Length: 378
Image (cartoon, rainbow, N blue to C red; front, side, top):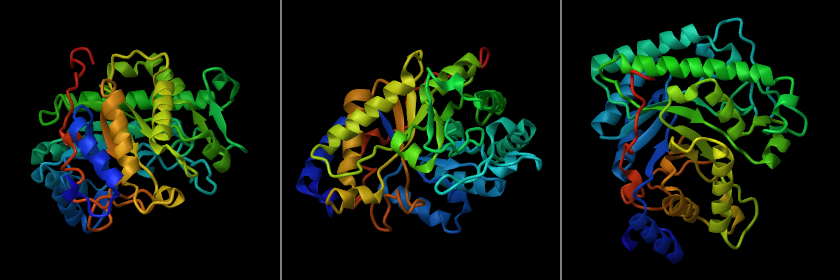
């Protein structure tokens, strides 16, 4: 395997070989959300295929023809597509909707409680018409994205010093009822998605995944004055509203923080992964699997820890999943391919300084074994 790595340390080579031999139960993919908006999208997909990517998570855009063209090309390249619908997008709301204001890193965003379900339904049905006509294949559909965070849900306000709504405190906040109203809209959107997929021959039986729950650090929330509902609190509320009847898996986003040099980066990453997954799963029925639909490390982490490569961090994360979480986590998707200047792993010629990073991950096989809810009992 040493030939695979062009600019990695010897320790990274050894860890890479270990991960390649052990990962197999957690499917691996990569994010490229806005690829349908890129003029050069065919070359992006070609590069993904060349590196061995077999699973990609992309975002639905309002220009339907672009969605269909991109998915069709992914299908031709034998790359499985997980499509997510970002419910905070303007085209899913009526003209009367007013965004909550933003500040700094947290932008203006639509409140989920004002989602226009009829618009959502019209958009999704139009999308499925093209899927059916072109015989396109979808590996899964995900509804929502970090809806428990002020980043993606205008029902959650900006608060000086930030705020975390926990199981003990969430009812103390006056905006909880509005947030809960947004969760009701989310459940209805997921329910409709499940029904529409199963009533379309080309997509019947396609797994439906709950939008990824966010859990940034309390320090970050304080810095940007953002509010957040703890993943476990949001998920328990959704379950009370009936979400389990319509989803096949839950999802979470994990971005470990290494803000200063550490002697044991792997241990620090493992601790944060465990903390976030345990918090999200606390008090939750363990019968449904989890997906990590976004995870990654910013380029600044490598520089802060005296390294020119982030490879070791990614290999540590994959090793942690395969060794400790393979019975819980079915799939994970690196954020992202090259859309983000902060998190992108493709440098124009390689992924994290390797040749064929994704090709050499056994966990790239997809889709994972997943038991879908019976259409007769959605």
